[in-house]
Length: 432
Image (cartoon, rainbow, N blue to C red; front, side, top):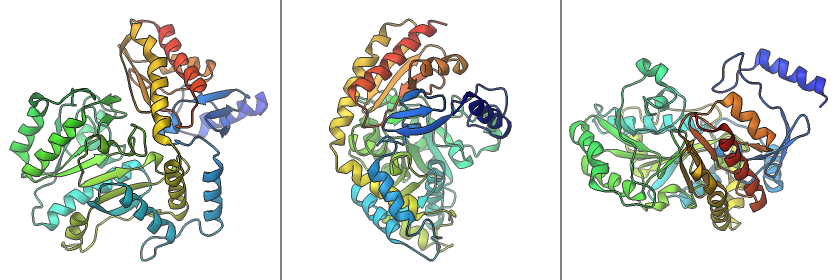
C-alpha cells in the first residue's frame, strides 16, 4: 500500500471502528496488517513482524498453512453453514467424537458455541440447570479464583477477579459470586494445607448454595499469567466431591498443547465435570468453542423440567469452523508437537533469563510455549507498542505483563529475536 492509502485506511479506521479495550477515539493508531505467512505478519508499509502472540494464543500452526487452507476450501465448496437445530452434519459429528476421544473419558457430551466467553456462559448455565433438574435450585452461586479471567460476557465477567480484573466497572450489575485466593504454590512445588484453607471454608459455609467451582487449570491467563501447582487441582477435585459441587475447567487458553500437555488438566491427572475449549481449537482460523460435560450432567438436565438444555447459538457447530477444527487437531497430532513445545520452552527460558537482572522486573517465568516477564509497574502501551514494532516483533503487553505465546512452528532464531526484543524493550523502559 502507498503512504496515502495507509493514511486513508487509518483515518477511516479511526472514524468508524472501535478496537478492543481501547477508546473510540484518541487512542494510539493500530498497525495495518495486509498478509500473514508462517510466524510473520506483514504490515501495510512493507515491514514484517515476528508474531509472539499467536493472534491472542490461537494460531498455533502460524498463518496461511496449506493443510488448514485446504480444509477451509474443501468445506466451503460443500456447505459454509446450516442451522444446528433439528439438523446435523459430518464435521460436527466428527469433531465431537475427536474431542471426546482426546479428553477425559467421563466427558461424553459436546455443546458447540462460537467464542470462549460463550463457552463459559454455557458451562455456568449447565451447572445451574443441572442442580435445578435435581430439585436443588438453590445451588446458583459459583466459586472462582482471584486473578482468574473467563471472558467478557456477563456470566463470564461475574467469575473474573472482581478487584484486579478488567470488569470492576460492571460490579454492581453482576451476579455476586464467591472468590478464593489465587493459588500461590508455584508450578513445580507442592500445595500445602494453607493453600486450601479459604476455599475449604467457602465450601463448608456455602456448599448448599454453590453449583460449581470454576478454575483455569495450572495457568491463569489474562488475569495475570500465573502458573500454579497441579496438586492444587487434585485437592480441589477432592473438595468438590466431598461437598457435592461441580468442577469446571476453563481451558480456552491452555488447550491443545500450550502448556506442554495436550490439555493442562493432564498435569494433575484429575477430571472436571465440565470443560471449556476455544482459541486454538481451530488453529486461529475460525471462531469456535466447545463445552464438554459428563453424561450424567447431560442426562440429568434432559430429564429436568425444561426437557432440554436452554441455550442455542445461531452459528452453533458451524460446518466451516468444525471442519477447520478437525484439520487443526489432526495436524497438531500428526507432528512432534510436544518436542516443539519443549524446544520453545527452552528458547523462551534462555532468551528471557537476562530480564531477571533488571531492576524493573518482578519475575520471569515460563511454562510450555508461554514466556512471561512480570514488571514492577504497569507498562505504558502508547510507549511500548511502537518499541516492539521497531524491533520487528508483535507483542501485546497488558498491565504489568510482557509475555509471549508464540506459534508452535516458530524456530529458535525467530524465538531468539522475539525474546531479545522483549528483554531490550523492558530494559529501555527502565524502572518507574
